[in-house]
Length: 457
Image (cartoon, rainbow, N blue to C red; front, side, top):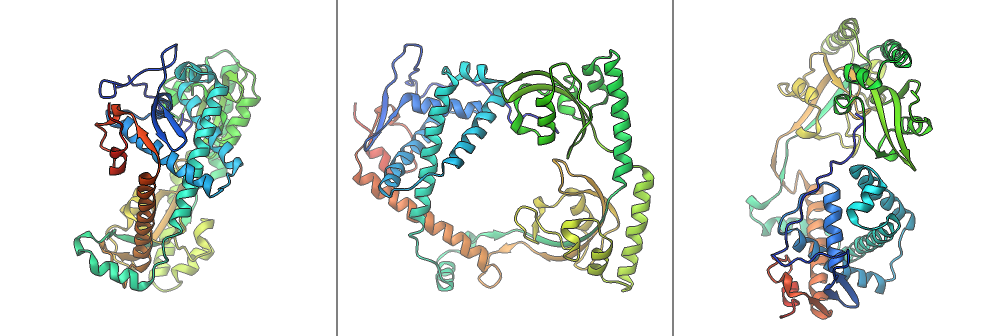
């Protein structure tokens, strides 16, 4: 669906232990911490609070404590990154800055609203956010460099770790499923043609004087915008599908687009306002609908394949290679894989509900009845008909050396690396000049060393 990526929750600022100070509009900013030669000001902290709220995060009384501790650690590691002469990937910094700016502009509705909320011109916000991103990036790079000092683990280390922890503290490996599929798509061309004919009729009605907003409420299949007459709100073009954004940016306000196709479906677009690379538009989204005949034909073909496989007339793998229409799995004999990780094993929450319902009562080797499901294309996926074979089920169990060595090795490595970073930071706190304002004395910092650096009144 065409939706704004973030909801803006403008919540009133909770006072920090009754002593937080405002700044700006002539009020005095102040230093709240010093780390080596780096100073942290109240405006630095409040800027982080504002940014989180602008992205939709609610605050509580501990937010400033958590943010301050994060800033202090950033400053500490930043100092070390400079000693280690780490270099920035400036292109990556600029990409992150653009993404952050787009998120905030979209959440607030435009540049003017952003400037009003933060009380600063956009060019200054860019400068501040770029500096923050650079510091966070260097901090992450320094953490990675420190983590590399962790000695490589051997199988002996993993086994020794297992011998020193209780069974109750071992990580639980969740139930995992391995599955194969044969997919058939409905007649997309016929369905797309029907949608285009409907949208052309709607476009003609708009050109003849009917209101776009009224027809959006009646026909659009984007529930988020349909009830608002199809209006999407002022947003950065980067959050939309490229075809949608390109069409919208090329339109003059009030002009109705030709039909625009995206992975979500087919759209008519009317731009209401444009500012730089942002726009506010209305749209009517209609998705291809498939007939009962499509379903029946696909189910008959799948049922015939299922029968042939069960009768040993053809193997599942060969049937998938010859008849499946899913390009991602057919070349692997139908074997399903997570598109993000490439793993052939799925946890329950990684399986589409329709697929899980089809295999939940099968035993390994069993093949489901034909079902309707969704593929991995588009935000919601396209309709597809399929049969699924349950290849293997690995029940949930405490991790063991014999069966889960890789998972254990990765987890223990992460633990050891974090211990290395923690030890470095704790030692660095001891030998670095750090002073923290007493207004933060009630903070429950995760590192005891910070408490020792709080100044006395």
